[in-house]
Length: 397
Image (cartoon, rainbow, N blue to C red; front, side, top):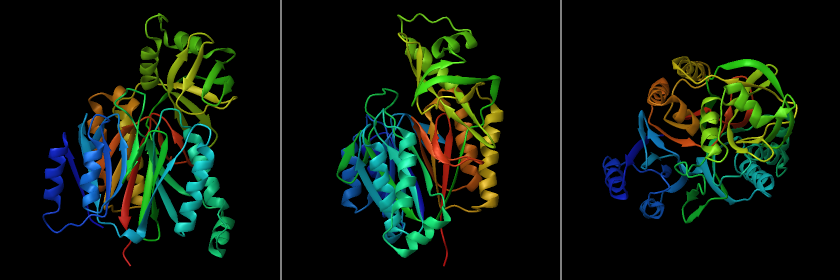
């Protein structure tokens, strides 16, 4: 499988880069497209449609290609993957139907390939990432269309899921996912890959260091945290971090920075913690609205702002995947939380460049509003403040 990554700050630049990429008789069948909400998606899609290329697309909170970070641009990964080895699904969804729609996706994957892997992206602001993971896994396990499926269910194998939530340049109104002839905010797009022919390996890693004592979420509902150690969650954060916020002048701008620099770590026994970002604060009931579920009773700690040690940890865990599971890659996809970009600053390009060098393959990526993937010691789940790296390699027969 051959892949090429291209970029441009306008449709015209992309057209030129696309034409040049085909000059050596390269014939891509699939395009992974990450672009700014400000770019002309229709024009980009028309270009790829005319070439008969399947599109997996998402808007971003920033995009990058190999080691170069872009803003307001278009980045694209072109692959000449055998059409029998993948299937593209686009499902409209809503806050109320997320779980059931994700189940449908799991069933489709299970009925399409014996061993499917899911690379996904979601649009919208309020879609529950945990329900996406749960739904796909439930649908994957409940499909009973064949004896082979029943045999696979009996092994209780965990399905491979990696991806991210689309962004919209931090406007936080209408991130979009798109494919050939379709574009929507409240939607789920999935590239379902046949793992019998394309090896899909990845890691969800963050490198954040926990600080302070372990605290208990004493009251929460889904992604809303009301109290921590029986104290209002918002007040706890302000006191713990020594903040003095004027609630009449943009508390949520301050909280966005808190979420970027001091995310919560949900501690679990014998597995890596999962990160949760505080996105909004409710000044009436003093609650925190996080970018993922925080179960009542959870044990949490705050995190230190990242340094070069965090980058080293991310690269180290990627190297372990290379050494133990995937020594080579034909292409790489990276889903990195926008909070990492905000908190890492100029160090972000260092992380992206070093991760790309692990496999030294063409790489495309975007800054997301949430990530899907499997940590070193965990399971496939929804993350915040995390970097999810996926390596693809065609299996030689």
